[in-house]
Every structure is written in C-alpha cells, then in structure tokens.
Image 1 (cartoon, protein in one colour):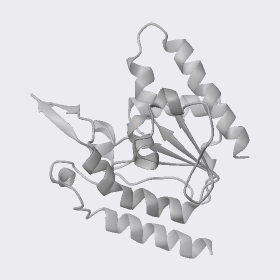
Image 2: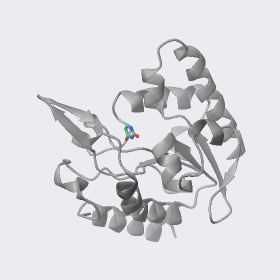
Image 3: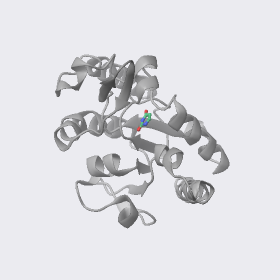
Length: 198
Ligand code: URA
C-alpha cells in the first residue's frame, strides 16, 4: 500500500542520514536524499548535491535546480510526476578560502552510493529513469559511453523499464556561446521524456 511504501522510503532515508559507505560524509554537512512523490512516473538522477543543497538538505534547490525547474515547466512536465535524486548523496568539495568548490565524485564514490539509488528506484519503480549528465549515466549504466553518445535514444534499466540520458542542468549554466540553443535542446529532451512517461 501507499502507507507501507511511504514507511519504507522514510526508513531508507533515515538510514541514509548515517551513511558511512564512503568518506564523503566526513566533510559534508548532511546526506541529501532524493525527494518527490513516491508515485512519480519519472525519476531524475543528478550528480551530487551542491553547496546550497548541502546546507538545505534538499536536492536541486540551488542555481542548477532553479534552471531545472524552469526547463521542466517549459517542457510541460508537472513537478508532481517527478522524483529527483543524485548519484552521490554527499557534497564533495575543495575549500578555497571561504568558498567550497564542487569536486567531481570518483568511480569509487559513485559505486558506494549506488546502494541508495538502487533502493530508491526499487521503491518508486518509475516508468522512466533519467540520468542528468555523465556521473548519473556512469552510476546507472557503468562506463558505457559519453553523454553525447548516449543522449537522444531510449536505454533500458535492468528491470526492462526505459532510461534516458541528457545533459546536467549545471552544464547549461557553464556554456557560453550557445546557451539558448543548448537550453532548448534540453527542454526538447524533457518534452519527449514527458510524453513517453504519460
Ligand atoms: N546538482 C546536482 O547534480 N544535484 C543537485 O542536487 C544540485 C546540483
């Protein structure tokens, strides 16, 4: 039942708050677990929490998350149909003075954190799983290709459900020349995913 599902998810999340499967918990403020309705049709997997997410304890609330929200709206995807989580659930960073600069998770950290995504996906059982960027693609599919080779076609999860790969929203914050074009391409990917998950 929905009540049991909610209880299972809540205990999973509570367990994740004390995760020590890799060393990243030592410097991060807290575990940032996935968020969204457990009946979601689509699960989006990002890379790892950023500075803002680490402090808030919630995924995709910083600049990349705001861009992502706008793109979902532009693609006509109802936020209530989506659950968002990350391949790695602790913020990895380097200190530069007072600033904390994002540092990419490595293969060992991604592998250690697979434990949590696997369980989130087993509970939610979405119609479609979407990897946002290379780290998420690596987590879900192993090192089978790059975002550009994997993008634009349907892939399969081990349980046979559909999976897609597209860019990470923070990539759209970094591109210089073709930002509008890249944003539109991202929205088109989301629109297609939204239609297929309906
Ligand atoms: N980038 C991510 O991959 N995940 C977040 O939660 C925020 C930024």
